[in-house]
Structures are given as C-alpha cells and as structure tokens.
Image (cartoon, rainbow, N blue to C red; front, top):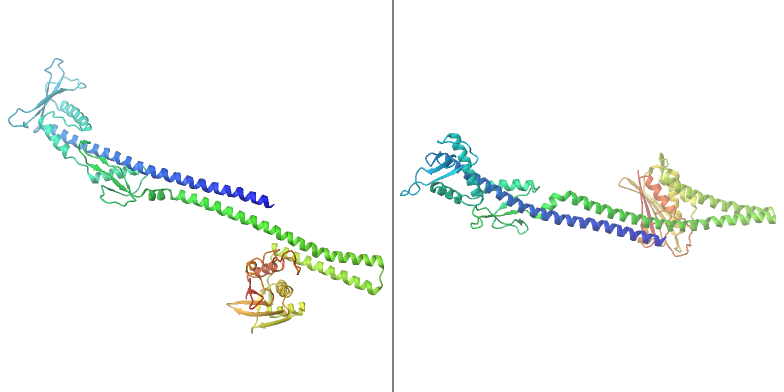
Length: 484
C-alpha cells in the first residue's frame, strides 16, 4: 500500500510539474511573440504612415500643378496638327519668360490615346492634356525628381517641392490609424528628445522627398511592450495562472486526501484490533462460563455466580455496541433538539450515575443554566468527558473540577483534571474519529477512539464548540460552549 501511494504521488507530481511547466513555457513563448509583433507592427505602421503622408503631399503638389496649368496668366496651352502624322500636338508655354532677356520656354508633346485631330485648343482637349501632364508630373514626383518642362513651371514646382515638409498633426492622425489597424491602441510621441528608457522607440524613417540625399527623420516613442502585453493578454494570463493554481490546489487536495485516508485506514485498523480484543474477552468469558455450567453441574450458589459473570460480560458487549451505534447514527441523522435542559441538574445526575470514587468539586455560578437541546446526548457527552478524566488520570490523588459559567450570552462547562495532560501536537487530533493518542504498542487504558469524536458531534449539533487546553500546574481542561 505504501509503495502504491508513493508511486501515485510521484506520477501526480510529474503530471502537475508537466502541466505547470507547459503553461509557463506557453506564456513565455506567447510573451515573446506578442512583444516581437508589437515592435514589428509599430515599425511597419510608421513606414506605411510615412508613405501615406508623403503621397498626400505629392497629391497636394499635383493640385498646385493643375491650378498653374489652368491659369492663363501663367501657362498658355495650344495645339495643332502640323506634323508628319497630322496628329494633335499640344504645346505649353510660359506666358511670362522666367528670364526677362530670354524667350518664354515652351514644350510640345503628343498624347497617343488622344485620337481626335484638333487644330485649335478646346476645353475638352485642354482638360485631357492637363490630366495627362499631371500623370507625368506624378510619376516624376514618385521618383523624387522635378523636370523643367518650362522654366516657369519647373521653378515653381522645384520651390514647392523643396519646401514641402511633413505635417506633424496629419502624420500623427495617420500613424494612429495604422496602429489601430494592427490592434495597437497605445499612446505615442513623435521625435521626443528624452523618453522613458523602458519605452519602445521605433526605427527612424526619412520623410523628405529627396531622400536619401536630404534627411527629415521621424520616429515614435510608444509604451513599454511589456505593458502592452499585460493589457492585451491579461485574461489569457489570468486564465493560465488560474489553471496552474487549480491544478496545484487539486494536487494538494488529492495528496491531503490520500494521506488522510491512509491515516484513517491505520486508525481504523487500530480500532478494529482494539475492538476485536474488547469483544473477544467478554465472549471468551461467556463461553468458558457457559461451558462450565454445562459440564460441571455446579450447585445453585456457584451457578448464580457464573450467571452474574455472563450478565456482566453481556452488559459490557451491549454498552460497546450502543457506543458504536450512537456514533453511526450521528454520522447520518440529526437528533431532536426541543428539550429544555437544566445543565446544573444534568451535571449532578451524571456524577450520581458514575459514582466516580474520586475527588470531584463543582463550582456553579448563580442563576439558571438552561439550554435548548437533547438531554440524553448531552448527558452522555458530559459523562464521556468525566469518565475520560478519571480513566486517563495517573495522579496518585486524582481530582476533577467542574465549572459552570456564563460568558457573552453563552454557557461554558469546564471539566478540569490533574492528570498527565495532552501534548500540543495531539490537541487538534483527539476529536477525530478512531484517534487515540499514541503510547507505543501498549494501551494501559482500553478505548476505541469514539468518545471525544461523539462529544464533538453532539456539541456541534447544539451549535456549540469544544476545546482542550492545559490545566496549571498539570492536567487538562475540556471547555464546552453552548448557546442559551
């Protein structure tokens, strides 16, 4: 049995350690993954936000270019078909020369998708050409280049292109949107000079149109990735550690139950051993006496003595069976509690029934000591305590003191003796069923480990309590607290 318990405990320990280890490993890997993704997503969101913001600035430049192209005070747009293919050719020309001493610049180009032959510019043709020209400029801007199609347009575009800077407010909005797309809802600061060392700093990204030749860097300072992990994964973490806690608790509870059952089996075995002896002794006495009556045909006086022996041993067996049955009943049934019990009279009746033969002093406070309960069970409980105080008292002059008092609306019954006392390590166990204080292989006083457990059950069903303390200078005090 011992080997099996050890094997079970070892296997359960490995199981608990395995579950705990796997949960901790999973949490650690999950932590690394979440933190790594947080950093990667924050950097990726920054790059995407920069591209979006730069695209918006390029579109703003295109809007300006389209305005210039539509302004007859800046640009003159004409068309003709005077070429070999007789296709429509468009010409753009600065209205005012950029350099006063030179002629105004102009450039001619065709549009392959425009099939109409137009000898004079029309609003429709002008619109088609401006859109086509805007697409050409857009491609140039995407390549971070400015072509001087005319000196006027080129210089205007160059100036606007060079002066274009990142709009911090607009970029903050875009970056926040990109973070939200990646389920990151943390606050951040851009281009901070000083930051908490625990915060995460993204890589730097260039927002200048002429990168890498011109630098205009942007970076963000976000919260500590650990805080992000705890906030985003808190329920998973709580669930995981709750599972670990439940597993450890179940292991502890199971181990405790196993040891309790093992201990109970040992106590029951001891109880059965004692009980077997207690039953065999009177049975053997009855058997021997009955055989003597049958075999020797004694005279009437001797026969009467033999019958008295049989009756005495039968009475002992009856008392033993009653004690076992009373304990069994308390395990499954509650008893009636409707009687008015006078504890003063009850204690005196118990002493009269026991006829102890030892010195017993009683100290009752004035007044009535009435409780609502079961008189028979209270009588038996107090009787058990007084009997124990006598049976286990090894003093040369055994003495017992019984006190009745009231405290905080309750009645206290104290039974004191001057015996050997009970060691502190056994005080919490003496009320366990079948438990007997170990005294080696010999028990000088016969018992079954039922008396005190019975007393505790009775007092508990009366909504009271029982405790055991040391008596000074020697002995034990059993205190019963009963509600009035």
